[in-house]
Image (tube, rainbow, N blue to C red; front, side, top):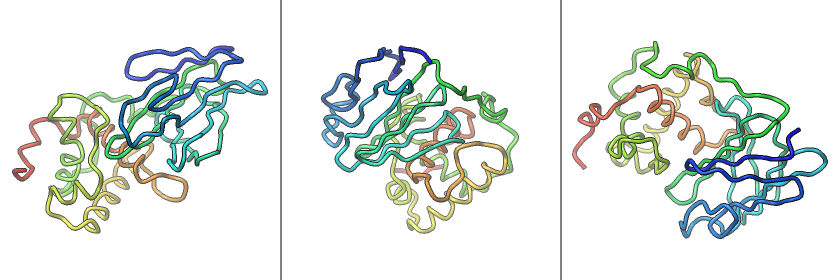
Length: 226
């Protein structure tokens, strides 16, 4: 296994060598953001017993660790740690309204490979979405579509429901339905159940909708006026 682990965040690379510890947070070796809701030091990354580890030193924030498609994933509670065995590993967490993600690359035991559905760059052959389901995708992707990118400032379910004038219960029911339909179509990372953070599943849905162009800037006209 490699003696160097590479950390990629927002296009910048940081190397961690055996015997070193990289801290991640608001005031750390790897500064994620100056968001006051983010922990000063959220994570530590280091090598021990011939394995690379990521350990949570957060006060109460839960961190999600997964392969790129979300097929293998785990929740990292405060004080817990997990060995890194899949290359690459994606680390996702939320502070306030913002979701952050960075990737870890190294000569790890197993390689992650995308499914055929995840490799497609254009619109995919998916079941026809209802008008309400398309509205749900558009409102979740609205901020990114207006910026013309895939940034991480995504709305909460409550914010998205209010934007559409729906109840939170109705929004969550439609969100579950969309995730189930895309999961059956072969899109990984959207399956619910024990051990999957709701925030991560919603983030994965937004990322896939943008990457696969399930919604585009033209679809913003479907939304009610702010």
